[in-house]
Amino acid sequence: MYALTGVKFLLRGFVLVALLLVLGFVAAQFGTAADPRNDRPKRGASLETLAHPPEEVVSEREDKLEDMCIQAKARKMPLAPFLILHPQARPSDAEIETLCKWTASERAKSE
Image (cartoon, rainbow, N blue to C red; front, side, top):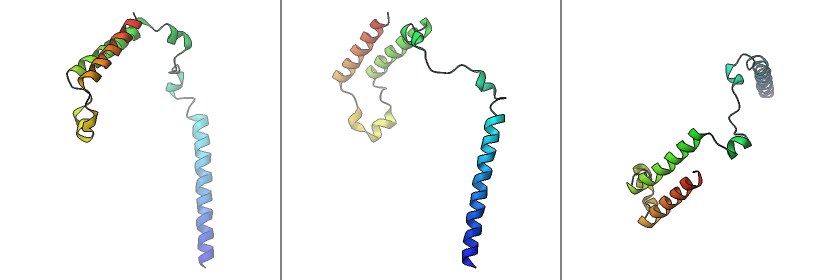
């Protein structure tokens, strides 16, 4: 009696897995053709884009680099909740100065 119950349980499991596989295959075949997201270009950057990024990308990068230095000098980075758990992560004045020098050199490279 117990062996029969185990066999029924296994059989139901196999049927369920087979049904899910079939439904997944059907969804993959029919669902993606009508999906408007498939017409979008891929998000990966081409080598040409990496070698010569658009001006707005360069400008945005420079702004973010400048903001990094400003936030570090204002002691807003790292965020306060992170410092509660990791007080040793508070940067020293020398580390902030090193970060600002690095961001300035990176901004100079993109000009």
